[in-house]
Image 1: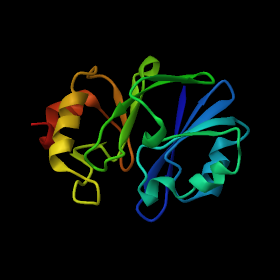
Image 2: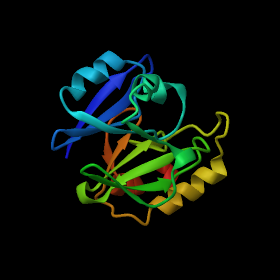
Image 3: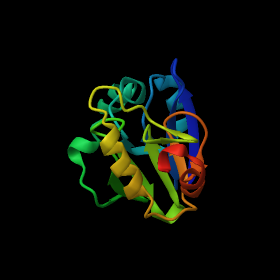
Image 4: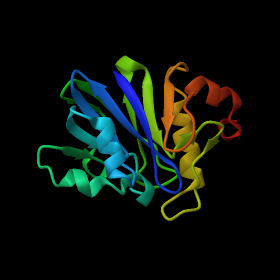
Length: 174
């Protein structure tokens, strides 16, 4: 699976395009649809995954909603279980704290997670925004520790990291 990061908007949100066999998924379509569309190229978009509904992560979502064949996956229509969409398999993990609707998408075969604003390289998402909750965030951080340490984390802002690096070095995991 190829992972393409597209940085969008004034607060530099990371949109990700996952490509496999001329199909793609879009994760967190920020507010620059032309830039995202250019990176999609000729691939067929089979779904849009939303880690949480803050404005910087869904600004271009309306451009995908116009196409009936594209499924949108967000907390309101997801359960914590495995999903298969086209050639993609992923698990949904509820990871509230930054927001009540925060989810992580785990691609086990590719050993990677798309964590939105749940975990950043060296930090975590703010919990002082509406529906954020610091005590709930602590529970989510504790829950994510059960996964393999070598999983690559793709956050909603900034650089990628690994779960092991965050467990060892991120003060919020202590």
